Length: 101
Image: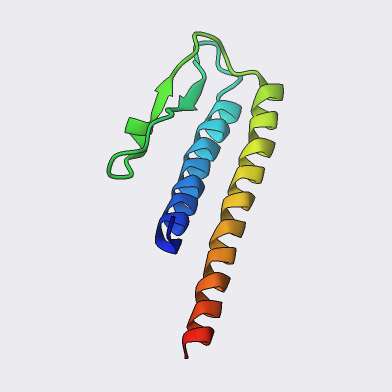
């Protein structure tokens, strides 16, 4: 696996976390509505970064605020881990350039 694919995977993970955050925030905001159905992010890779295609109503129940808060913590950890991969990849490329120079 080369550094560009590692970086690409990390950026994709950060994008997925961003979409999950949007869905979770939407569920939290609309949790009090009687006819609102929970929204989740699909497991597939988004096409052309269009958010409506990546979100779907998957449950016929109203959102559970406890579960949504747990989702927020999981999203935070996922985003942080992917950001660390990006940072490490940048350091690796910098070190390689220093060695080559």
